[in-house]
Image (cartoon, rainbow, N blue to C red; front, side):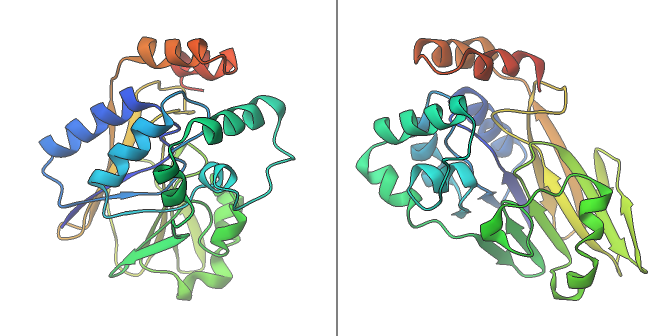
Length: 243
């Protein structure tokens, strides 16, 4: 089974459309979204509509939770709060109700999915460094063999086993038996690893492989929509830089 895992779309319909085109070319069997459909970008309804059509399940990201009234975001910085308030004001009633129903985690066999750390999904803790991955060691026997996460917008993978935690640095790699894996899938709509192409992952459960795929898209159009919506200029400018 080939599973495409997408995350952190952030209302970027241009990036999402191109990623989904590639998933068709790659002949995936299922698509799972790890959340943050909205926030930052200017196409929240278009992204919600499309994700609802194509995914087996969509999880609740922190931006989705904020827009849907499922978490307090008063501590977010001003520009992010404004983008969330704007998203809530333009979302259709149907899409808003959908966000209110999204789950925090999901599982297919021995493959798990959540937005942030799997230890307490509602807390939206980040895992993008070895130190954070090591904090999962006490819980490792309760984790599925592979857990896919989003939230950081970074492409990071960690293997936990034999009392140690290792970085996995490869565009495509195999899942070794005896290890548990935490894999951050990058971002469709707002990459932050200095590569401005949209990013997603394909997990082949039969071949026991994980592959990162990068996809070019019309950044100029996505950014211009942000500028036209009077959202923070930086949310559009950073798309060109991948930060």
